[in-house]
Image (cartoon, rainbow, N blue to C red; front, side, top):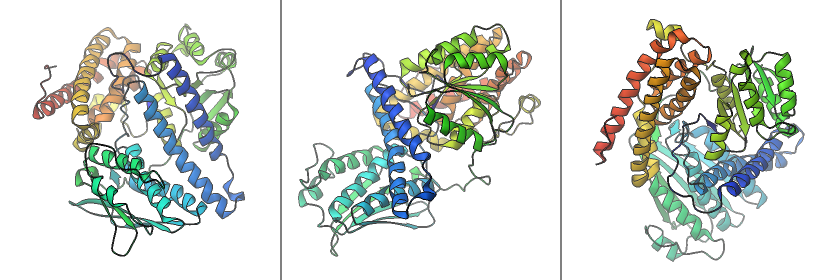
Length: 517
Protein backbone atom coordinates (compact mmCIF):
# COMPACT_ATOMS: atom_id res chain seq x y z
CA UNK A 1 0.00 0.00 0.00
CA UNK A 2 1.23 3.50 -0.72
CA UNK A 3 -0.08 6.77 0.64
CA UNK A 4 0.51 10.14 -0.94
CA UNK A 5 0.02 13.67 0.31
CA UNK A 6 0.40 15.62 -2.95
CA UNK A 7 4.07 16.42 -2.65
CA UNK A 8 6.05 13.37 -1.60
CA UNK A 9 7.68 12.91 -4.95
CA UNK A 10 10.54 14.07 -7.09
CA UNK A 11 9.19 14.24 -10.65
CA UNK A 12 11.65 14.13 -13.50
CA UNK A 13 11.83 17.10 -15.83
CA UNK A 14 11.70 16.96 -19.58
CA UNK A 15 9.77 14.68 -21.90
CA UNK A 16 9.00 11.18 -20.76
CA UNK A 17 10.26 8.26 -22.74
CA UNK A 18 8.52 5.03 -23.56
CA UNK A 19 4.77 4.58 -23.52
CA UNK A 20 2.51 7.60 -24.09
CA UNK A 21 1.18 9.07 -20.86
CA UNK A 22 -2.41 7.91 -21.27
CA UNK A 23 -1.41 4.39 -22.27
CA UNK A 24 0.91 4.11 -19.29
CA UNK A 25 -1.79 5.39 -16.96
CA UNK A 26 -4.25 2.79 -18.18
CA UNK A 27 -1.73 -0.03 -17.94
CA UNK A 28 -0.75 1.19 -14.48
CA UNK A 29 -4.34 1.13 -13.29
CA UNK A 30 -5.12 -2.29 -14.73
CA UNK A 31 -1.94 -3.92 -13.44
CA UNK A 32 -2.42 -2.53 -9.94
CA UNK A 33 -6.10 -3.49 -9.97
CA UNK A 34 -5.20 -7.06 -10.88
CA UNK A 35 -2.54 -7.14 -8.16
CA UNK A 36 -5.10 -5.83 -5.68
CA UNK A 37 -7.44 -8.71 -6.54
CA UNK A 38 -4.64 -11.26 -6.16
CA UNK A 39 -3.51 -9.97 -2.78
CA UNK A 40 -7.06 -9.38 -1.61
CA UNK A 41 -8.20 -12.83 -2.66
CA UNK A 42 -5.34 -14.44 -0.77
CA UNK A 43 -6.35 -12.55 2.36
CA UNK A 44 -9.83 -14.01 2.17
CA UNK A 45 -8.63 -17.63 2.06
CA UNK A 46 -9.58 -19.53 5.23
CA UNK A 47 -6.22 -21.13 5.94
CA UNK A 48 -7.57 -23.21 8.80
CA UNK A 49 -9.29 -25.42 6.19
CA UNK A 50 -6.09 -26.04 4.25
CA UNK A 51 -3.57 -28.81 4.64
CA UNK A 52 -0.14 -27.81 5.99
CA UNK A 53 1.30 -28.27 2.51
CA UNK A 54 -1.31 -25.97 0.98
CA UNK A 55 -0.73 -23.38 3.71
CA UNK A 56 2.96 -23.33 2.81
CA UNK A 57 2.10 -22.56 -0.81
CA UNK A 58 -0.40 -19.85 0.17
CA UNK A 59 2.31 -18.22 2.31
CA UNK A 60 4.64 -18.43 -0.66
CA UNK A 61 2.18 -16.80 -3.05
CA UNK A 62 1.24 -14.11 -0.51
CA UNK A 63 4.87 -13.10 0.05
CA UNK A 64 5.63 -13.17 -3.67
CA UNK A 65 2.51 -11.11 -4.45
CA UNK A 66 3.51 -8.44 -1.92
CA UNK A 67 6.97 -8.28 -3.47
CA UNK A 68 5.51 -8.15 -6.98
CA UNK A 69 3.21 -5.28 -6.00
CA UNK A 70 6.20 -3.25 -4.80
CA UNK A 71 8.18 -4.09 -7.95
CA UNK A 72 5.25 -3.08 -10.14
CA UNK A 73 5.02 0.24 -8.30
CA UNK A 74 8.68 0.92 -8.87
CA UNK A 75 8.63 -0.14 -12.51
CA UNK A 76 5.58 1.95 -13.36
CA UNK A 77 6.96 5.02 -11.62
CA UNK A 78 10.30 4.58 -13.38
CA UNK A 79 8.56 4.18 -16.75
CA UNK A 80 6.77 7.46 -16.09
CA UNK A 81 10.03 9.19 -15.17
CA UNK A 82 9.00 9.66 -11.54
CA UNK A 83 10.39 8.84 -8.14
CA UNK A 84 8.03 8.57 -5.19
CA UNK A 85 9.59 9.52 -1.85
CA UNK A 86 7.80 7.69 0.93
CA UNK A 87 8.41 7.94 4.62
CA UNK A 88 9.08 4.22 5.06
CA UNK A 89 10.77 3.63 1.72
CA UNK A 90 14.25 3.31 3.21
CA UNK A 91 13.69 1.14 6.25
CA UNK A 92 12.92 -2.55 6.67
CA UNK A 93 11.77 -4.22 9.90
CA UNK A 94 14.19 -7.14 9.84
CA UNK A 95 12.08 -9.71 11.71
CA UNK A 96 9.00 -9.06 9.57
CA UNK A 97 11.05 -9.19 6.41
CA UNK A 98 12.65 -12.49 7.39
CA UNK A 99 9.21 -13.97 8.07
CA UNK A 100 8.12 -12.98 4.56
CA UNK A 101 11.33 -14.36 3.04
CA UNK A 102 10.84 -17.66 4.85
CA UNK A 103 7.21 -17.89 3.74
CA UNK A 104 8.02 -17.23 0.11
CA UNK A 105 11.08 -19.41 -0.38
CA UNK A 106 10.08 -22.33 1.85
CA UNK A 107 7.06 -22.85 -0.36
CA UNK A 108 9.10 -22.70 -3.55
CA UNK A 109 11.68 -25.15 -2.20
CA UNK A 110 8.94 -27.53 -1.02
CA UNK A 111 7.35 -27.51 -4.47
CA UNK A 112 10.72 -28.49 -5.98
CA UNK A 113 11.21 -31.33 -3.45
CA UNK A 114 13.96 -29.37 -1.73
CA UNK A 115 14.13 -27.36 1.46
CA UNK A 116 14.93 -23.82 2.50
CA UNK A 117 16.26 -23.10 5.98
CA UNK A 118 16.65 -19.74 7.68
CA UNK A 119 19.21 -19.41 10.48
CA UNK A 120 19.47 -16.16 12.43
CA UNK A 121 22.23 -15.61 14.96
CA UNK A 122 21.00 -13.01 17.43
CA UNK A 123 21.42 -10.26 18.26
CA UNK A 124 20.38 -8.70 14.98
CA UNK A 125 19.49 -5.07 14.24
CA UNK A 126 15.82 -4.15 14.42
CA UNK A 127 15.78 -2.14 11.20
CA UNK A 128 17.75 -1.99 7.98
CA UNK A 129 17.99 1.43 6.35
CA UNK A 130 17.47 0.24 2.82
CA UNK A 131 14.53 -0.02 0.44
CA UNK A 132 12.66 -3.29 0.93
CA UNK A 133 12.26 -3.65 -2.82
CA UNK A 134 16.03 -3.40 -3.23
CA UNK A 135 16.66 -5.90 -0.44
CA UNK A 136 14.06 -8.29 -1.86
CA UNK A 137 15.70 -8.13 -5.27
CA UNK A 138 19.19 -8.77 -3.92
CA UNK A 139 18.39 -11.63 -1.57
CA UNK A 140 15.61 -13.03 -3.75
CA UNK A 141 17.93 -13.39 -6.73
CA UNK A 142 20.56 -15.10 -4.58
CA UNK A 143 18.05 -17.58 -3.13
CA UNK A 144 16.39 -18.21 -6.50
CA UNK A 145 19.77 -18.91 -8.05
CA UNK A 146 20.68 -21.28 -5.20
CA UNK A 147 17.40 -23.20 -5.45
CA UNK A 148 17.87 -23.56 -9.20
CA UNK A 149 21.30 -25.11 -8.72
CA UNK A 150 20.53 -27.16 -5.61
CA UNK A 151 18.31 -29.47 -7.71
CA UNK A 152 16.08 -30.54 -4.84
CA UNK A 153 18.74 -30.15 -2.16
CA UNK A 154 18.99 -27.77 0.78
CA UNK A 155 19.44 -24.01 0.56
CA UNK A 156 20.23 -21.95 3.65
CA UNK A 157 20.13 -18.26 4.50
CA UNK A 158 22.20 -17.31 7.55
CA UNK A 159 22.30 -13.91 9.21
CA UNK A 160 24.86 -12.67 11.72
CA UNK A 161 25.74 -9.18 12.89
CA UNK A 162 27.83 -7.32 15.42
CA UNK A 163 27.49 -3.67 16.35
CA UNK A 164 30.09 -1.67 14.52
CA UNK A 165 30.78 -4.43 11.99
CA UNK A 166 27.62 -4.60 9.90
CA UNK A 167 25.32 -7.45 8.90
CA UNK A 168 26.35 -10.55 6.96
CA UNK A 169 23.79 -12.58 4.98
CA UNK A 170 25.06 -15.87 3.59
CA UNK A 171 23.16 -17.91 1.00
CA UNK A 172 24.55 -21.43 0.50
CA UNK A 173 23.51 -24.44 -1.54
CA UNK A 174 24.79 -27.95 -2.21
CA UNK A 175 24.80 -27.69 -5.99
CA UNK A 176 27.72 -27.84 -8.42
CA UNK A 177 29.03 -24.39 -7.51
CA UNK A 178 29.44 -21.19 -9.51
CA UNK A 179 31.04 -21.47 -12.97
CA UNK A 180 34.60 -20.10 -13.02
CA UNK A 181 33.71 -17.27 -15.40
CA UNK A 182 31.00 -16.05 -12.99
CA UNK A 183 33.49 -16.02 -10.11
CA UNK A 184 35.99 -14.16 -12.30
CA UNK A 185 33.63 -11.45 -13.55
CA UNK A 186 30.91 -10.82 -10.98
CA UNK A 187 32.90 -8.06 -9.28
CA UNK A 188 33.42 -6.10 -12.49
CA UNK A 189 31.54 -2.81 -12.57
CA UNK A 190 30.95 -2.69 -16.31
CA UNK A 191 29.70 -5.21 -18.79
CA UNK A 192 27.13 -7.96 -18.54
CA UNK A 193 27.66 -10.94 -16.30
CA UNK A 194 28.20 -14.26 -18.08
CA UNK A 195 25.05 -16.29 -18.39
CA UNK A 196 24.72 -19.75 -16.91
CA UNK A 197 22.76 -21.70 -19.53
CA UNK A 198 21.00 -23.84 -16.91
CA UNK A 199 19.10 -21.08 -15.13
CA UNK A 200 20.09 -17.73 -16.56
CA UNK A 201 21.63 -16.93 -13.19
CA UNK A 202 24.17 -14.51 -14.68
CA UNK A 203 21.57 -11.78 -15.14
CA UNK A 204 20.27 -12.29 -11.61
CA UNK A 205 23.79 -12.09 -10.20
CA UNK A 206 24.47 -8.93 -12.20
CA UNK A 207 21.34 -7.38 -10.68
CA UNK A 208 22.57 -8.44 -7.24
CA UNK A 209 26.03 -6.97 -7.82
CA UNK A 210 24.71 -3.66 -9.15
CA UNK A 211 22.15 -3.19 -6.38
CA UNK A 212 24.66 -4.19 -3.70
CA UNK A 213 27.05 -1.49 -4.91
CA UNK A 214 24.23 1.05 -5.03
CA UNK A 215 23.48 0.62 -1.31
CA UNK A 216 27.13 0.58 -0.27
CA UNK A 217 27.36 -3.15 0.45
CA UNK A 218 29.72 -5.83 -0.81
CA UNK A 219 29.20 -9.25 -2.38
CA UNK A 220 31.57 -12.21 -2.40
CA UNK A 221 30.90 -15.45 -4.29
CA UNK A 222 32.81 -18.66 -3.66
CA UNK A 223 32.75 -22.42 -4.05
CA UNK A 224 33.66 -23.85 -0.61
CA UNK A 225 35.98 -26.85 -0.49
CA UNK A 226 33.13 -28.85 1.06
CA UNK A 227 31.10 -28.38 -2.12
CA UNK A 228 28.25 -26.22 -3.32
CA UNK A 229 28.13 -22.47 -3.77
CA UNK A 230 28.13 -19.63 -1.28
CA UNK A 231 27.19 -15.96 -1.66
CA UNK A 232 28.12 -13.61 1.18
CA UNK A 233 26.38 -10.24 1.26
CA UNK A 234 27.77 -7.65 3.68
CA UNK A 235 25.72 -4.60 4.65
CA UNK A 236 27.74 -1.86 6.37
CA UNK A 237 27.01 -0.56 9.85
CA UNK A 238 25.54 2.64 8.43
CA UNK A 239 22.56 0.67 7.11
CA UNK A 240 21.79 -0.92 10.50
CA UNK A 241 19.53 0.45 13.23
CA UNK A 242 20.07 -1.22 16.60
CA UNK A 243 17.55 0.92 18.47
CA UNK A 244 15.23 -1.20 20.64
CA UNK A 245 11.68 -1.83 19.52
CA UNK A 246 9.03 0.61 20.79
CA UNK A 247 7.49 -0.35 24.10
CA UNK A 248 4.07 -0.32 22.42
CA UNK A 249 3.75 -2.90 19.60
CA UNK A 250 3.18 -1.60 16.10
CA UNK A 251 -0.39 -2.83 16.17
CA UNK A 252 -3.40 -1.71 14.18
CA UNK A 253 -4.89 1.48 15.64
CA UNK A 254 -8.25 1.74 17.37
CA UNK A 255 -10.81 3.36 15.05
CA UNK A 256 -13.73 3.09 17.46
CA UNK A 257 -16.01 6.09 17.25
CA UNK A 258 -14.91 6.84 13.69
CA UNK A 259 -17.70 6.93 11.09
CA UNK A 260 -16.31 5.90 7.71
CA UNK A 261 -18.04 5.99 4.34
CA UNK A 262 -16.52 3.54 1.85
CA UNK A 263 -17.50 3.94 -1.80
CA UNK A 264 -16.13 0.88 -3.63
CA UNK A 265 -17.77 -1.17 -6.37
CA UNK A 266 -15.43 -4.19 -6.26
CA UNK A 267 -16.93 -6.86 -3.98
CA UNK A 268 -13.55 -8.37 -3.12
CA UNK A 269 -12.21 -4.99 -2.06
CA UNK A 270 -15.39 -4.33 -0.09
CA UNK A 271 -14.93 -7.58 1.81
CA UNK A 272 -11.29 -6.81 2.59
CA UNK A 273 -12.04 -3.27 3.74
CA UNK A 274 -14.98 -4.48 5.83
CA UNK A 275 -12.69 -6.94 7.60
CA UNK A 276 -9.91 -4.40 8.13
CA UNK A 277 -12.12 -1.56 9.34
CA UNK A 278 -14.27 -3.89 11.43
CA UNK A 279 -11.15 -5.32 13.05
CA UNK A 280 -10.24 -1.81 14.17
CA UNK A 281 -13.79 -1.14 15.48
CA UNK A 282 -14.64 1.52 12.91
CA UNK A 283 -18.29 2.22 12.12
CA UNK A 284 -18.19 1.74 8.34
CA UNK A 285 -20.95 2.18 5.76
CA UNK A 286 -20.40 0.71 2.28
CA UNK A 287 -21.88 1.81 -1.04
CA UNK A 288 -21.11 0.48 -4.51
CA UNK A 289 -21.30 3.55 -6.76
CA UNK A 290 -20.91 7.31 -6.82
CA UNK A 291 -24.61 8.18 -6.84
CA UNK A 292 -25.19 6.04 -3.75
CA UNK A 293 -22.27 7.79 -2.05
CA UNK A 294 -23.82 11.22 -2.54
CA UNK A 295 -27.22 9.96 -1.42
CA UNK A 296 -25.90 8.54 1.85
CA UNK A 297 -23.96 11.76 2.51
CA UNK A 298 -27.28 13.60 2.36
CA UNK A 299 -28.73 11.35 5.08
CA UNK A 300 -25.85 10.50 7.43
CA UNK A 301 -22.81 12.13 8.98
CA UNK A 302 -19.28 10.78 8.59
CA UNK A 303 -15.80 11.58 9.84
CA UNK A 304 -14.09 10.52 6.61
CA UNK A 305 -14.92 9.11 3.17
CA UNK A 306 -12.79 6.54 1.34
CA UNK A 307 -13.67 6.75 -2.34
CA UNK A 308 -12.71 4.51 -5.25
CA UNK A 309 -11.97 6.45 -8.41
CA UNK A 310 -13.46 4.01 -10.95
CA UNK A 311 -17.14 3.49 -10.04
CA UNK A 312 -20.36 3.11 -12.04
CA UNK A 313 -22.95 5.86 -12.45
CA UNK A 314 -20.65 8.53 -10.98
CA UNK A 315 -16.87 8.36 -10.73
CA UNK A 316 -14.88 9.06 -7.60
CA UNK A 317 -13.60 12.32 -9.07
CA UNK A 318 -17.18 13.45 -9.75
CA UNK A 319 -18.20 12.52 -6.21
CA UNK A 320 -15.38 14.60 -4.74
CA UNK A 321 -16.15 17.56 -6.96
CA UNK A 322 -19.82 17.42 -5.96
CA UNK A 323 -18.97 17.26 -2.26
CA UNK A 324 -16.53 20.17 -2.42
CA UNK A 325 -19.13 22.26 -4.29
CA UNK A 326 -21.65 21.99 -1.45
CA UNK A 327 -22.38 24.98 0.76
CA UNK A 328 -22.81 23.06 4.01
CA UNK A 329 -20.43 21.35 6.46
CA UNK A 330 -20.24 18.23 4.29
CA UNK A 331 -18.06 20.22 1.90
CA UNK A 332 -15.22 19.99 4.44
CA UNK A 333 -15.46 16.22 4.94
CA UNK A 334 -12.01 14.58 4.68
CA UNK A 335 -12.00 12.50 1.48
CA UNK A 336 -9.34 9.98 0.52
CA UNK A 337 -9.04 8.29 -2.86
CA UNK A 338 -8.70 4.50 -2.88
CA UNK A 339 -7.16 3.89 -6.25
CA UNK A 340 -4.82 1.92 -8.44
CA UNK A 341 -3.97 5.14 -10.29
CA UNK A 342 -0.63 6.28 -8.85
CA UNK A 343 1.19 8.23 -11.57
CA UNK A 344 1.74 11.96 -11.24
CA UNK A 345 -0.93 13.08 -13.72
CA UNK A 346 -3.47 10.85 -11.97
CA UNK A 347 -2.56 12.21 -8.55
CA UNK A 348 -2.81 15.79 -9.72
CA UNK A 349 -6.30 15.16 -11.12
CA UNK A 350 -7.38 13.47 -7.88
CA UNK A 351 -6.19 16.36 -5.72
CA UNK A 352 -7.71 18.89 -8.09
CA UNK A 353 -11.06 17.16 -7.56
CA UNK A 354 -10.78 17.79 -3.81
CA UNK A 355 -9.08 14.75 -2.27
CA UNK A 356 -7.20 15.14 0.99
CA UNK A 357 -4.98 12.17 0.20
CA UNK A 358 -4.50 8.95 -1.72
CA UNK A 359 -4.25 5.38 -0.45
CA UNK A 360 -2.97 3.15 -3.22
CA UNK A 361 -4.25 -0.30 -4.02
CA UNK A 362 -3.41 -2.99 -3.12
CA UNK A 363 -3.53 -2.50 0.65
CA UNK A 364 -0.57 -4.44 1.99
CA UNK A 365 -0.67 -3.47 5.68
CA UNK A 366 -3.83 -3.16 7.75
CA UNK A 367 -2.00 -1.24 10.49
CA UNK A 368 -0.53 1.26 8.03
CA UNK A 369 -3.94 1.65 6.39
CA UNK A 370 -5.56 2.34 9.77
CA UNK A 371 -2.97 4.95 10.69
CA UNK A 372 -3.47 6.65 7.33
CA UNK A 373 -7.24 6.78 7.89
CA UNK A 374 -6.71 8.32 11.34
CA UNK A 375 -4.27 10.86 9.96
CA UNK A 376 -6.56 11.96 7.14
CA UNK A 377 -9.50 12.12 9.54
CA UNK A 378 -7.52 14.52 11.72
CA UNK A 379 -6.98 12.08 14.57
CA UNK A 380 -3.42 10.77 14.16
CA UNK A 381 -2.41 8.52 17.02
CA UNK A 382 0.47 9.61 19.22
CA UNK A 383 0.49 13.28 18.21
CA UNK A 384 0.07 16.18 20.65
CA UNK A 385 -3.11 18.20 20.54
CA UNK A 386 -3.00 21.79 19.24
CA UNK A 387 -3.63 23.03 22.79
CA UNK A 388 -0.42 21.34 23.95
CA UNK A 389 1.65 22.96 21.22
CA UNK A 390 0.15 26.38 21.92
CA UNK A 391 0.91 25.98 25.63
CA UNK A 392 4.45 24.81 24.96
CA UNK A 393 3.78 21.51 26.72
CA UNK A 394 3.92 19.19 23.71
CA UNK A 395 6.35 16.30 23.50
CA UNK A 396 7.83 16.77 20.03
CA UNK A 397 10.66 14.24 20.08
CA UNK A 398 14.07 14.62 18.49
CA UNK A 399 14.72 17.22 15.87
CA UNK A 400 16.25 15.09 13.13
CA UNK A 401 16.85 11.45 12.30
CA UNK A 402 20.14 12.03 10.52
CA UNK A 403 20.53 8.35 9.74
CA UNK A 404 17.25 8.34 7.77
CA UNK A 405 18.31 11.46 5.90
CA UNK A 406 21.67 9.97 4.93
CA UNK A 407 20.16 6.58 4.07
CA UNK A 408 17.75 8.24 1.63
CA UNK A 409 20.65 9.93 -0.13
CA UNK A 410 22.77 6.79 -0.06
CA UNK A 411 20.04 4.76 -1.73
CA UNK A 412 19.73 7.47 -4.41
CA UNK A 413 23.42 7.10 -5.30
CA UNK A 414 25.90 9.94 -6.02
CA UNK A 415 24.11 11.40 -9.05
CA UNK A 416 20.65 10.80 -7.62
CA UNK A 417 21.64 12.45 -4.33
CA UNK A 418 22.51 15.69 -6.10
CA UNK A 419 19.17 15.75 -7.89
CA UNK A 420 17.32 14.77 -4.72
CA UNK A 421 18.92 17.58 -2.69
CA UNK A 422 18.14 20.13 -5.40
CA UNK A 423 14.51 19.05 -5.64
CA UNK A 424 14.09 18.77 -1.89
CA UNK A 425 15.45 22.29 -1.40
CA UNK A 426 13.21 23.64 -4.15
CA UNK A 427 10.10 21.87 -2.82
CA UNK A 428 10.70 22.98 0.77
CA UNK A 429 11.25 26.58 -0.34
CA UNK A 430 8.08 26.51 -2.44
CA UNK A 431 6.01 25.08 0.41
CA UNK A 432 7.35 27.66 2.85
CA UNK A 433 6.45 30.54 0.56
CA UNK A 434 2.96 29.13 -0.05
CA UNK A 435 2.34 28.54 3.67
CA UNK A 436 3.48 32.06 4.55
CA UNK A 437 0.82 33.47 2.25
CA UNK A 438 -1.89 30.95 3.17
CA UNK A 439 -1.49 31.43 6.93
CA UNK A 440 -1.47 35.22 6.58
CA UNK A 441 -4.73 35.03 4.62
CA UNK A 442 -6.32 32.32 6.74
CA UNK A 443 -6.73 30.21 3.59
CA UNK A 444 -7.64 26.86 5.17
CA UNK A 445 -7.83 24.76 1.96
CA UNK A 446 -4.38 25.97 0.92
CA UNK A 447 -2.95 25.38 4.40
CA UNK A 448 -4.27 21.82 4.28
CA UNK A 449 -2.83 21.25 0.82
CA UNK A 450 0.61 22.63 1.69
CA UNK A 451 0.83 20.86 5.05
CA UNK A 452 0.09 17.56 3.29
CA UNK A 453 3.11 18.21 1.08
CA UNK A 454 5.30 19.15 4.03
CA UNK A 455 4.19 16.10 6.03
CA UNK A 456 5.34 13.85 3.21
CA UNK A 457 8.66 15.64 2.71
CA UNK A 458 9.59 16.00 6.38
CA UNK A 459 8.65 12.40 7.13
CA UNK A 460 10.69 11.11 4.20
CA UNK A 461 13.90 12.89 5.21
CA UNK A 462 13.64 12.27 8.96
CA UNK A 463 12.77 15.79 10.15
CA UNK A 464 10.78 14.34 13.04
CA UNK A 465 9.98 17.48 15.03
CA UNK A 466 8.86 19.35 11.93
CA UNK A 467 6.77 16.35 10.90
CA UNK A 468 4.89 16.34 14.21
CA UNK A 469 4.37 20.10 14.27
CA UNK A 470 3.05 20.14 10.71
CA UNK A 471 0.68 17.25 11.50
CA UNK A 472 -0.73 19.35 14.35
CA UNK A 473 -1.10 22.38 12.08
CA UNK A 474 -2.91 20.20 9.56
CA UNK A 475 -5.26 18.91 12.27
CA UNK A 476 -6.04 22.46 13.36
CA UNK A 477 -6.81 23.43 9.77
CA UNK A 478 -9.12 20.43 9.37
CA UNK A 479 -10.90 21.48 12.57
CA UNK A 480 -11.15 25.03 11.15
CA UNK A 481 -9.39 26.60 14.14
CA UNK A 482 -8.69 29.80 12.24
CA UNK A 483 -7.65 31.78 15.30
CA UNK A 484 -4.86 29.35 16.20
CA UNK A 485 -3.29 28.77 12.80
CA UNK A 486 -0.74 31.61 12.90
CA UNK A 487 0.48 30.62 16.37
CA UNK A 488 0.74 26.95 15.38
CA UNK A 489 2.59 27.84 12.19
CA UNK A 490 5.27 29.81 14.04
CA UNK A 491 7.19 26.77 15.43
CA UNK A 492 6.67 24.98 12.10
CA UNK A 493 8.34 27.90 10.32
CA UNK A 494 11.33 27.75 12.66
CA UNK A 495 11.80 24.03 12.06
CA UNK A 496 11.29 24.43 8.32
CA UNK A 497 13.98 27.12 8.19
CA UNK A 498 16.32 24.81 10.11
CA UNK A 499 15.64 21.95 7.70
CA UNK A 500 16.42 24.13 4.70
CA UNK A 501 19.70 25.21 6.29
CA UNK A 502 20.47 21.56 7.05
CA UNK A 503 19.92 20.64 3.39
CA UNK A 504 22.12 23.55 2.25
CA UNK A 505 24.88 22.57 4.69
CA UNK A 506 24.81 18.93 3.62
CA UNK A 507 24.83 19.91 -0.05
CA UNK A 508 27.85 22.15 0.49
CA UNK A 509 29.67 19.19 2.04
CA UNK A 510 29.44 17.27 -1.25
CA UNK A 511 30.34 20.28 -3.38
CA UNK A 512 26.79 21.27 -4.35
CA UNK A 513 25.89 24.93 -4.09
CA UNK A 514 22.22 25.65 -3.40
CA UNK A 515 20.70 29.13 -3.39
CA UNK A 516 20.03 30.35 0.17
CA UNK A 517 16.37 29.87 0.94
